[in-house]
Image (cartoon, rainbow over all chains, first blue to last red; front, top):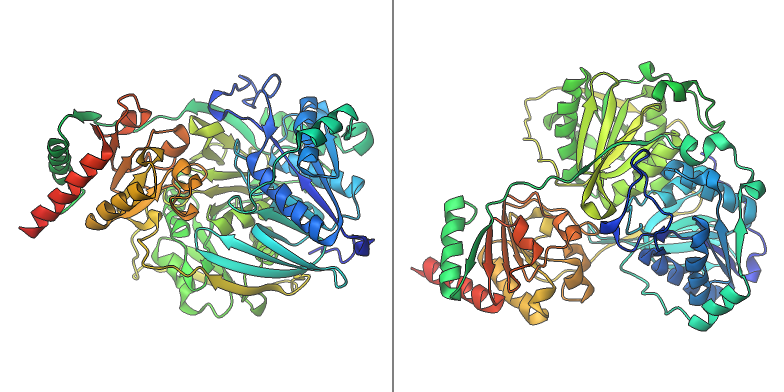
Length: 284
Length: 353
C-alpha cells in the first residue's frame, strides 16, 4: 500500500481543500445518446452543478470558515462548464478550475478518476482534503472518491456528515452516517484524506449572484487543458476506459393488470380488499 | 473492435492482461457487526446461475477477525468455496484496508468476475478495488448476464433517470467488477447440508491505516419503529399528494394493520415527513415487496425504478392522469383520506368479527 505521509505544507496557514464537482444533466429523462458510442451527448445540453456537490462544497466551506485556508473547486467538463464553476465561486469557493480538452471525451469512471487525480497532483500537490459529493444525480455511480483515492494511495471515507481537524497534529476526525445500517462511524486519519459527503447533510448556503457575476466578469475560472497536464493519451478519454456500453434498450416494464376503480370510497375499499385477498398478498 | 483494442498500446499505469489466466466468479460477502448482508447472499444465487453458463465455480470472499463458523455460511447459500482472511488488522472496518485485502486476493487467484452488493459499504469498497486492479466497474446493476463465447460479464443498469437500460462490458480487462443493488435478486435458501472448500489466507503486508482508523461506532437510537422498507412484505408509500405529516400518520396506521411498513417518495422525504432511510427510488432504496401501496404517489420514473419489481402494485391517487396508474395492478381514483379511512375500518371490522 502506498500511503503518502507527506503531501501537505503550510498547514498552519489553514487547510487546502479541493472540491471536484460535476456538471449534471438537469433533466435526466430527456437526454440524447450518441447512436454509435452510446455516450451522453453533452453538447448543447444545459448543465447545472450536481446538487449533491453543493452539499460537499458546503462541508468544505464550513471547514475553511473554521480552520482557515482555501477551497478550490475543479471540474472535468466541456467548455460550457465555466458557468457552473462560477456558481461555486458564487457559493463561496476561493478558486475554480475547468479541466477541459477534447482528449478527455468519452471517459468512463476509471479514465475520469485518472484525469482528476493527476490534475490534482499536478496543480495542487499540497492539498489536505479532497471533498466529493456522494454521487451525481445523472449517472449516480459514486465511483469517483474511491477511484481517486486508489490513484493517490490515500485513505478515504464515504458519507461524511461532519469533521474536526487538529491542525498542529495534521489529524482529521470524520463522522459518517451509513443510511442502510442506521449507524454513525467516526474515523481518525492523518491528512491528506479523501471524503465524500452524505447527500442529506450539510444543506448548502445560497449562491451569491454578486460573487458569481464578479467571477464571470473578471474571468476567475481558470481553464486547464492537456497541453498543461500532459496526460498520457492511452490513460484518458475513450482509450483509457475499460468499460464499453455495448447496447442500450428501453426499460421493459412488467405487465400490470391496470384495473381502475372510481367511485364511492367505501365501495373502493371493499373492491381493493377483495382483490388483494384473491391475489393472496394480504391475510385477514 | 475488441481485438483491435488489445493490440493497441495500453496506459502505462495498466498491467497487461491475459484473459485466459482469469477464471471463476467471486462474490464479496459483506460481514459487519456480526451480520452477513442479504445483498451478498442474493449475489451468490445469481453467481451460481452465471457460473453454469460459462462452466466455472463460485467463490465467496470474507474478511474480518475471529470469524469462526460464519465463514461456512456462504457455502450453505450456494458457494463452492470460501476464501477468507481472519486478521487483527481487519477487526475494524477501514475502507482502504478492506479494499486492499480484496485486491491482494484477486491478484493471487485471478478471478474473472467480482461482484459486490451495492450496500453503502459495498459502494465504497468496489470502486477502489476495481481501480487498483486497473479494470472497469459498473455500479448498481439490476441484472447480470454472461456471454458464453467471450466470457464477458454483461452488466445491466438503468441510467439517466431509469428509463434506459445500458448493457456494459469490460471486454479487454480482467477481472470484471460490478455492484448490484440489494433486493433485485431473491435470497437463495440456506442448506446446511451443502459442502464446500474453505481456504484461510493471510494479509501479505500489515496495512498502513495512516491514523487510528475507525474509532467509534454509534447506532442511531430508534423509537418504536416499523421495519425498514427493504425488509417488509407490505410497504405503504407516501407521495407528495398525502400533503403532510397527518397523512403519513394515517398511512402508518394502515401499514401497521397490514403488518407492513411505511416508505416515501423523494418528495415526501425532502419535505421532512419521513426519514431518509425510508426513501424508495433511484436515489433511495430498491424494494420488491409482495404488496406495494402507493398513496398520493405521482409515479415519477425515478421512484418507479425503486419499486417496479413489486409483486402487486396498488395506487391511490386523485389525479386520473397520474403515471403511477400505468404501473399499477389495482388503481383507485379518489380522495385518499376517505379511501384509506374506509380501508382501515374494513380491516378492523373484518378482523374483529
